[in-house]
Length: 278
Length: 260
Image (tube, rainbow over all chains, first blue to last red; front, top):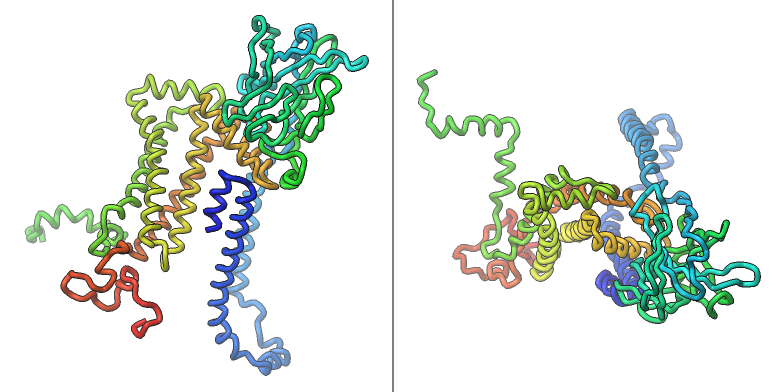
């Protein structure tokens, strides 16, 4: 019953999942208790014959009792040695399998071309290779908007194209402007979007990346950036709960980068206390 | 001695006897195949064998596909194209594996539905139900890991969504997702990882569990349908069921009654 509610909850909502899981756990506990009680009834009869006199006898003649018989010793030592050998083999193998997934991945900065290639207040979809060693499979798209200057510093809004619902590629809702530009293996296409939409499950975002409709749980992720020798470099991604205001003065509520579908603020973020290093 | 009268049948059966004497395998096969079942079982009770057949088809076609498949970011898609378009009957074997996968899942659910509706999960078969649920979960995991392998757009994005779904699990979710991807995002390593899980880890576990599943079926026998007159004790089969033996497992007796 609980499992059914849990499965339904996977489709409906997390609250239902919690209720289903609680019922499942409660009934599993009751079931196990039920089983162990039945065993307990028969055990009680078997245990009763023990009397206090016997234990006194043992105390008087400790040498008459072997603590371990020879066969028990051999049995245990075989099991123990087997366990040690098994551990020696399996621990490094498991480490080899698991560790790389949890080590720092390292994010390389990518040069996406001269700052002049990014017109003021328009979005440019920059498609680039985030890790040349991995090749085409690491192609990423980012929505880059030149916000002009904030004081004496250049300001860019660089939104990730990964939907924060479940990671599908978000598309700009709007017409293209001009032709596609090329800088090394980076393609640059200017858009005039009214927002961004995801084709998979219908998540919608405004031009600051705030969710406006659909299942996403936070605003679109962003990339940090740097400008070196007149070139724009895309850096490490970070997550955003929401953005107040627009343009260079916007207040971005920034959080550690999280997988899509995870809340980064509010009570639901307590479900994800630790993030793997990146 | 040389003129001893040996029938042709005995002469043909001699190698079988030789093996039987040393292994008992003939008896084992008979025990496995020629079991006593209730008289009023019906076609719905063949769904389990159908599921097993679907799994065997998956295993065989999978082995053949593995001979030509290249689990790498640059090689996976071209090798699938090669299998489908160039190799003799490659389209057929790949099609059998691809559609057979859906068939396997559908049959598992139908089999599960039959067991549920017939009440065949009840005492003493609860453990077999639990093993069946594990098999269902592992079968779905096979589907998930196999879906990435064609390495086309559907495969890539469906797996992205699947991995991120895992990522939303509380507490360990992000680590599960990172482990499945084998890095910060899906890459060539993810394919080989999924490939290894798909063709080495899961099939072995499924095979082992199927063995236990079938052992329990043989040990506990087959249930009658819920409408069975025979099982209700008013059968029209002429003679009354014999006492003892395995009838207690196929015919529900009142527990705690005078005859136990």
